[in-house]
Each structure stands twice: as C-alpha cells, then as structure tokens.
Image (cartoon, rainbow, N blue to C red; front, top):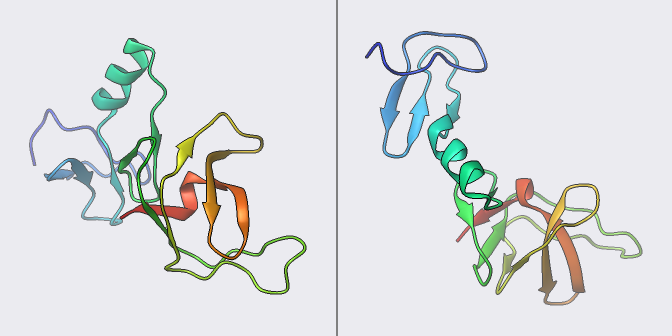
Length: 118
C-alpha cells in the first residue's frame, strides 16, 4: 500500500503490492512485472521474451506447454504439460518467437505466451 507503486494496468486499482518480482492487484488479481525492468532492458537494446507467467526466457531453456495446441496436418495435437528442451529464441512470424523440436512432431515454432519455464 505504498504510494510509489503504480496503479494496476488492468483495473486501475491503487492498492497494488509487491510479491517477489511481481506486482499484484488485490482487487482484480492481475499480476505483472514492474515497468522499470522492461524499461531497463529496452534501454540496453536487448530483446526480452517472457513466458506465460512472466519469466524471462533464454536460449537453451526447457519449457512446458501450458495449454493444448492444435497442429496443422496432424490428427493429434500437443498436449498441455509437454516438455520442450533446448529452445532457441528467434524473430518469428505472427508472434512465434520460440524455435524448437518436439518429440513426435519434429521442428516447429511456438509462441512464448503458451509456454512456462520449467
């Protein structure tokens, strides 16, 4: 309940608080990373890619798929909970910023919004 914490970007609630590296709004439950971290990375010229829960991803990380994904040309899709090892971060098309190889499917690209750092 400090005056130096920003208001919630989702509901504009003023009662935000810190929880580890995140800011949390008790009114709507929204969690986000403070803007100063993103501003520092932008100032240094680095591209920061975050997973579905806000963890920073880097090349070689292992991630877990958080929701079931349909795959074109395949009768079955990728199930939630599938582990993907040794990812590479790329400038992909349509927000696909992870290049990887998934066991049983082969090489493909994923969006960082559907994975969680393992």
